[in-house]
Image 1 (cartoon, rainbow, N blue to C red):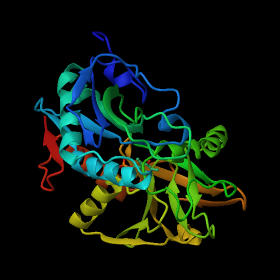
Image 2 (tube, helix red, strand yellow; image 1 turned 60 degrees about the horizontal axis):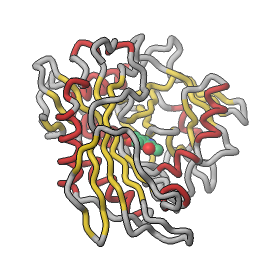
Image 3 (cartoon, helix red, strand yellow; image 1 turned 30 degrees about the horizontal axis):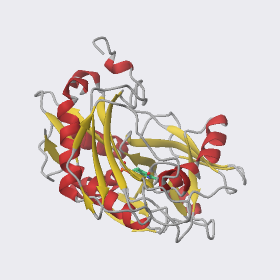
Length: 338
Ligand SMILES: *Cc1c(COP(=O)(O)O)cnc(C)c1O
């Protein structure tokens, strides 16, 4: 611990001092507990292991130039986890309990919040699982909520830059009325094969089309899609994408800097008319897209010829990061000081 090279950290797991846990049984949530163990004691027939009753969240805490630690949009994550719980029939955790657990996990591991200069941050991973032993397909009666944290390095080690993404029509991440709008492990399992193929071919992510017609842009593996044209921020309307909190924040920032915002279906061909495109999520804030290759048709949509991000992507990225690190006033009330 004493010699962590903060700016060399990747997006991996490093052991910290404590995690926070909360158990649900007999119809109610218990008190928060802290643990220094990285292990769970689980029944072999727990529903999370067999029937996928697992939801998670991802958010970050940042140490500012002023030394203060700020957590970004924690309440939004609490609400989204409740939505995921409703989606796969798990007990909902009260928002206040979620917030208390996150705050406690950050406070108890304060020495792992990277220094401002490093560009690194503390990743916070809440998860909620069904734990009752059940062999028949039924929702669990007992649940466990855990929050652990781990320091992660700056996403763009060599500076903010673009990457290519690929469309692979033979894979879907989620169905139109399936579980795509919930942040659950099952969606990720369903995306691993396509993700692996994309990485082997040199793409940073898969850009999924809508599963029904393969006509509209849906989202990228673990990030929402947006495009910029005619001074407008455009992001897909879909029943199978995960409501990204980063996207929601970028929409507000886009409006604040005078862009129009459209949330609507984006036909694949419209890519040819976009001036900039990007993926957005907690990990990178924005990961600007260099080009989209439609692997089946051989068509390519290029957004950056020199590999540099577009001016609007850069501006939105800088603004959001400035709020997260406390360099600009948080006029939206997005951050919680620890
Ligand atoms: C978590 C996630 C995102 C990004 O959401 P943020 O709240 O911005 O981190 C986008 N798509 C999927 C599928 C996700 O799981």
